[in-house]
Image 1 (tube, rainbow, N blue to C red):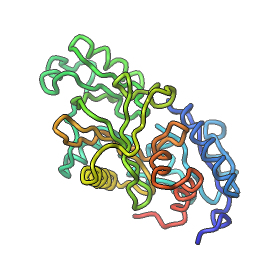
Image 2: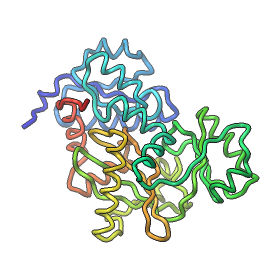
Image 3: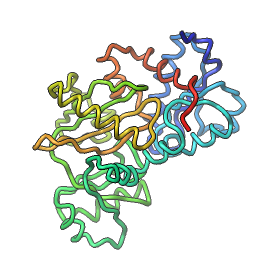
Image 4: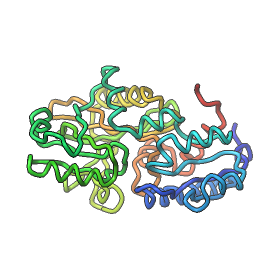
Length: 309
């Protein structure tokens, strides 16, 4: 059985320079506190302060990645840690980079026959009328490489489509439009080889945006999710396949919509989910009988295993 001494010196990486910095600071603080309570030799480190040079100076035996967004979740940090020979939590270089790219993740899912809404790439010279014809209204416009619903707009009319593109382009040079799925929203967390209970997310405004995720107390998280046993098993298996399709390891989360006919549609995968007091993975773990401190330790234990090639 793993002892806390087996982890050696652990560095929790949080903060960073992405648009999700504020959320990452909260996630990292929660993870850091959990490891301290468990007796792990741990220190927090913000790469925005000293970069990789500062991390090397800490000489950690392993790293818990609590960074979200670009520079922490997109494979770049994972590649650097590989070169430094420092074990780290979560997915490897390829899965992290692929999971951060919503459009290429969808291409992989489509190639494997997994259900995901149709999408089209946008640019400043896009034929907006053609987008509406192909995807219908409403539709979703989102940055390809951003998380926490930053820059996302539900578009209800042709007249607002170009403005939605400009808003998304503030966050990313690559912007996509996606067919809107009207229905229930679910999220499924994966921990090791285990699929955790699904959560149904209910938002009074109808849109699970940044405020609903991290600031509002009106967002409702339904556990159990309300699906019957067969449906939840089907949903869990779909999310496992989706996570494995991008090469996900350790832990992660898959977001799904269910349409009026009961069909599930994969929306995106998250390879470094939030660990704040509003976050979904800790909620699912708690429903499965895994407290926050144990959840953090289970994720960290993954660093003691050899990474898949």
